[in-house]
Length: 474
Image (cartoon, rainbow, N blue to C red; front, side, top):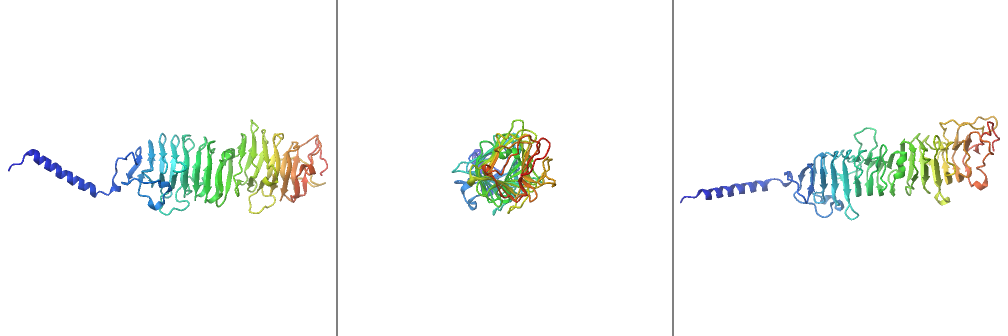
């Protein structure tokens, strides 16, 4: 019987369709390069493969062993992408650069895994928004099956990244590998954003180097809050290159690290606007870099306030200067004996005369400054400035070796209820200099409440010259 051409064509189409279906079934699902599906990941071209089975539940809160292959990305994002919960974990084997004009939004519960020794970089004019919530966080972690501290470099935010970049309810884990730029500090998050990095309930954990490094003129945004840095293996919790940005440190938990320090490198050394250094918490302190000279001064007469209970530790030869070339003020008032502010050296034990001290210059605003219910210990290393004063004792030349310096000012009631410990054996606790027509101030008077018993110095104070001549030393 003859078969019509239409029947034959239908038969051939059916055969070819079955063969094509069989070929599709034989293809490994994760080797395909599908068009990304809207329920898994929405991308601008970075996706290489998407796993067949979307992630279930909240991957960021799920044990690593339950994660699937997820989504594999290439090395750049050039447009707008959303990295979804269903497409998690989002794997960046070669790291990722979010280039100018591009945006990546990371959904609640999403997981991002970065390859060993790689980083996630938000370039100038680019944006990263990790939008976790309290019940549905976001996780950035190492791609290693058994991650350890320092597996990957971390998240880097460039100086002109879009200020709408933000991380909320997000964890950065196991970062801190050495960055490609030699000499820069390593950290789980490295930011250059002078506009201020916006962090809300962010945790950096198990990092090498620092938890967070604020480089250049970078700081935190005024909206930042609840920063938690924990189990960091390295020199400290937070690194500030610019002393003027220390005021932006948000409230948080910084004490549970190998070295629970807020480090002030003071490459940008001047505090030029009113600032408060908050108490960073139990077992945590500010640490000032070796030989750094932090200045509190400016045309707007800035005032630096040190919060009660705070400890500021100075590495060798470091100092804090107020009102030297321009007006400035310092308020270090613990309020009572239970919340004393401590200015100390950096060693595990207090060693006499390792750091320079507190230096109040001729432009200090004494009406807005006070050192009260404080401790000054370990100061008295030789100061670099020139100080004109009287001998400590008859016939004995005075070198600038003191713990607190007053250059040409009347301190009035500025220094009270302060204890001096471990000063320079051949020096003084309070070094007053500069000609003055007024009677000498007595910082050892009982009404001042200062304590010199453990100062270890030759004299509690010097007396400044009176109209060009020396007065008797107390």
